[in-house]
Length: 151
Image (cartoon, rainbow, N blue to C red; front, side, top):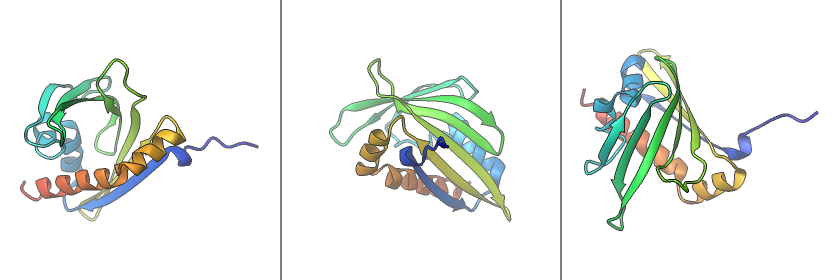
């Protein structure tokens, strides 16, 4: 019997944040919060619709000075427990987006956030791992932790 597994296509990171679950969930789904931790200050947000089927499109400057367009499509929003979105480059010829499942687990007034990034192929996962996808996800959660501490 074969089992369908995505383990060879996944990167999973988790972090315990010192903030209530509802606030952490809002930080992922509301433009005013997202702009303060997800993206560098000189990023341009072109549109943001944090509803199922909604898009968040933004351009972020790279180390080379060029602008890089990204797109998030919200798939499922189960407030405040779970969020599913597709994340990738905002271009016609873009590779398959990364399906990201985010869970928000309440732990004594704190929130454990788990990001499960599922790539289209094992090769795409390996390439992302080589370029530091797990470290980047941890860095983003670190930015989130820092932002939440200011609220």
